[in-house]
Image (cartoon, rainbow, N blue to C red; front, top):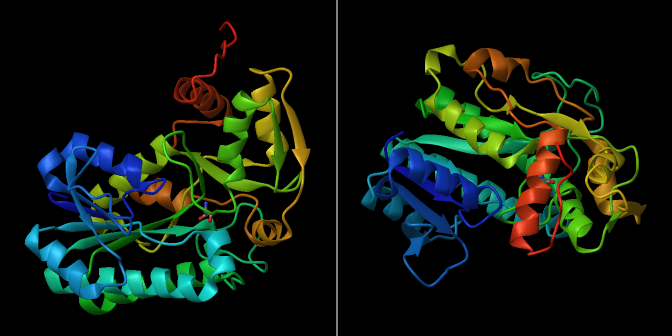
Length: 323
Ligand code: SER
């Protein structure tokens, strides 16, 4: 990777990936873009270009003008929003990816596309879900993710485009809020723990989903894109996880820091149905073996990090327990 273009750069992952890429590859070698026009050409110290990813012509022009060799295509609608606006989700997620693939083919770029635990459905084995398994998904987000995985594999096989992807779990971060996902509760819970010492979860007790701290997700994306291609048996997309959590697991860890914290439930049937169609835990052996994936944060270190960073961000006093 030398010159990197990031779509969806203002989103939860993009906003942190851009900063890390800038650190590693230099501010002049990273170009950020998003459908939201911030009205200036600088974002986090790198060049910013507004781009609606469904606009293939503009996508092509920007990548060509900046002599990009790697595209990180993060612009997409998340699961809950996609379920609300399925037609728009198909349009943005599939047309956006198609344009990213075509631009990569024409301008010989490598392409990273995030897939998701949403690429698994109700008939997928739920525990320790294998890398290669049944993917009969039943959400629009999942359909765009499975179709995307297949399309990326096709572009690699047919045109030699260097496509790579990760089935990301719920990502926990303190900088930018996720926008309309099913795993969002696992971020909100930390904000509310500090603000009101209680949280009402829209996901039911006992519903396990895979999660990962943002730092691990960003490092994984970069590591995969830098991996030796001859070692990659799979490409689109690798299972990767750090922990499998239900709401009460996070709550009991928070209680170690904020003993009065209380967890309530008011289950949202739409997001609960999505969550129930996803695995409880996935097996990421292929990612570990083929490109050395590993995650640094577990539930304890993630909880500590989230509470510490958010207390600064929200300006809420919080006394970490003595070590
Ligand atoms: N965090 C994502 C979502 O909930 C999973 O890909 O939509």
